[in-house]
Length: 166
Image 1 (cartoon, rainbow, N blue to C red):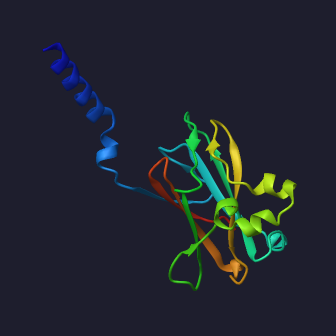
Image 2 (image 1 turned 90 degrees about the horizontal axis):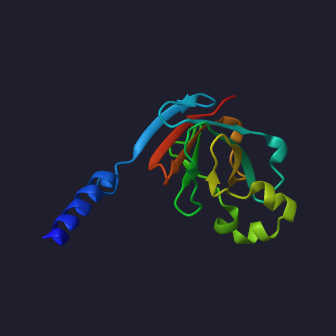
């Protein structure tokens, strides 16, 4: 009898605390760049600097700054996070590479070690930390018309749509 009661208690607790696993609805948040995101403790902004266009052959870079002002460590997943950008004149989002090491190993291996240290995708964002994530898009895009970055963070099960600061 004790065993059955224990199993029922464990089941009830697991359903209570892990209910998000059963109803995994993706949250969507739209915000202007550089503005604190209420309820998440994040500040995200993105910018394009044409001086970085020749850093990685075949790609242009967009810098995304994420500041974690929450009381939680934010996990980042190179395989399951998704990043894209929007450009005026294009109807659909354009996929951006965020993990050059895994998504284009040939381009990654051609980079000097110091550059690899700077542009590598982090695995977590500690409490109070601020980090720059570099996005790589095809060099044929006109990024002067870059307007928005879309970020899906698997660890938060949330899609952030951030209007870039100009």
